[in-house]
Length: 70
Image (cartoon, rainbow, N blue to C red; front, side):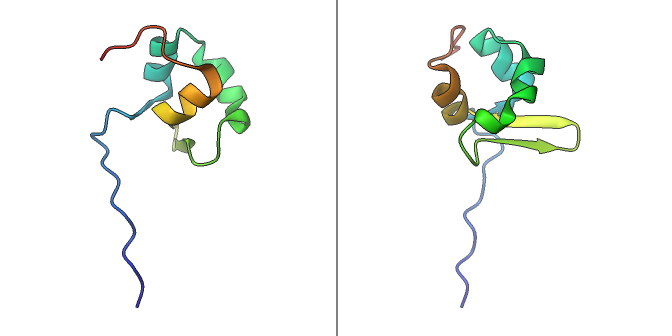
């Protein structure tokens, strides 16, 4: 019997659009899109025209957020 996949909570603040992440980290989102292959596997993905990234991926790539809203 197959184990069910864990559910992903899309309301989780650890998951954000690339443009939101760019603002929090003070980065240019177009540069981030061009260098998506430098993020850890599974931390960034394109859905249609929208890029989604995790806080884990952003911190691995750029360190702590500059404009963190905690």
